[in-house]
Image: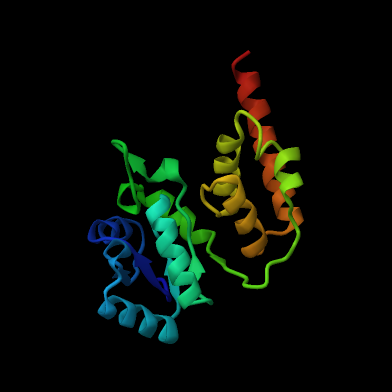
Amino acid sequence: MIKEVLVVEGKMDVVAIDKAVEADCIITEGFNLKPQALKNIEQAYKKRGIIIMTDPDSAGERIRKYLSRRFPEAKHAFVPVEEATDNDDIGIEQAKPDAIRKALAKVRTLDWEPKKTFTGADLIIHGLSGAADASVRRARLGEKLGLGFANAKTFLTRLNHYGVSREEFDRALEEMERENREQEESHE
């Protein structure tokens, strides 16, 4: 049983989570966030803590930002967009149990006083911005670091706000490059 309460968008998200882990959930019903839902989230936040696990889409990101401001010490779990997509539908309800467990194993806490560890130059140097395959590389690195998929600006913000160290970043990049080499060698 997960100690914190998971905050998700819909009833089908709860069904998917129940297949993966034992956890209590609160449903936001999308961005509606009715007063009772906010009250329930606040109570859970104060008593047990919460993990925000919204869909990896723009609506889910808006909900995450809103809840982050309201509940600054909430934890965050990100399911990669490719692991939360089925039949052109994106959402936690589409994620397989293993993807949900992996996301919960990489929970992060937002740091409101971000470190200035990473800059836009880091993204460019490592092909995470400005390169033809930058969005694919960000998605893969985001999965490895537990940050989810994001555009370059949001990815940089997440790197600096969610406590990613330079060593962790470098290790994940090295792992990505090793996987790329192995994949190329297997195709030769």
